[in-house]
Length: 137
Image 1 (cartoon, rainbow, N blue to C red):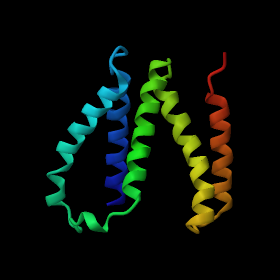
Image 2 (cartoon, rainbow, N blue to C red):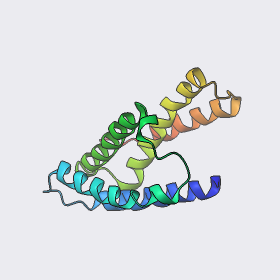
Image 3 (cartoon, one colour):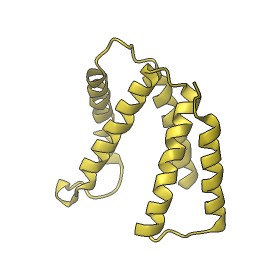
């Protein structure tokens, strides 16, 4: 299941970045995102009946609103980043590496995820990669 989830996430990311890069620049970004969310809603609704787990809205918590804010921030951020001239390959790497650098210590401190020298070295490599790929003008 893990490998399939990674493949799905990677494929989704590629489709997402290619698609959002081609949103016409004259279109209101909130209109574009609203229509995208509507289509995503229509695609998600049938999945409710094909995936195991509770279907009770009552057991949901604040995390649903957090996911919504995160989705909006990611999608609006990338849409505006690409409109400002962000490069397809670099923009995704920069934001994901920066996000990972923020999430690693959060995982260590608040979720008691394992610390290792390998992860520390990985953070160093990510920082070097960020520095090397940052646009210079």
